[in-house]
Image 1: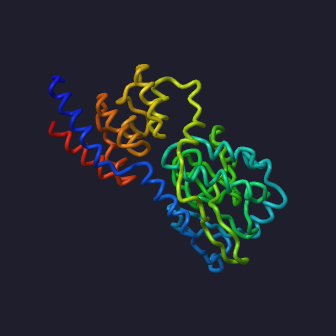
Image 2: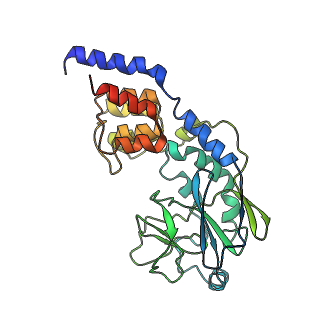
Image 3: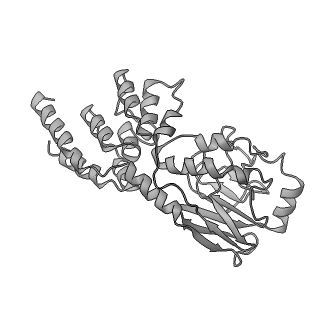
Length: 307
């Protein structure tokens, strides 16, 4: 690339900073607003064995009504069938694979999850199980199991085929991954009466990501792996350091490049830094932009096409 081209691209990137959408702070505000919008759910029309999917708190929430068989299983025997019967891994599950997209939820779950984990059936209502509709391990969608391989399976991960029982615990089904030990997350809720719950809670109006960035463990990672993780989490200093150590902004991981991860996880400043370091859009870049609605990044990349 000629020097004049480098200068023009740099000027385009720096002058565009004034057009940034204040990500990730704007995303945190949206997440907090969603969680603060409590939703009352009437459970009485859910029949035993049925699952109700609710879009609430900015997430998919699954509410399953347990059958008499489920209740007998939970009260009499489940230890040999499940990976983590005593819920020992819940804190690891909350902290697993940190990212800006999950930053607010990780804080909420850290503050609320334990009250459910102390219950042997992980529920405040014995007849119902309430879980978030995504896997803590793969981040993929969770659905009611259409054709279970385990006799106690209720939910399954569409990507890993992990199955979960009526308490949201990982089952030892055929071919289950021994690395997936995380029971399903439970959204914050309170009981109004025996057939009614309120999803959500009142949280602070601000979210400080710095505390979670400080907790990220980069030990044992290569500079490239460090770059990918830092881009997920708006950790600008670590991003710069990893590139200085030889990490490539264009090397692909299974979900994208550092640029793709920065689009869903870091500030406008980080994205422009990676572009200045030679980062190129990938086949999934536009999908990443759409996930978080970052019109500022879309306009920036469109403007660079003419450079």
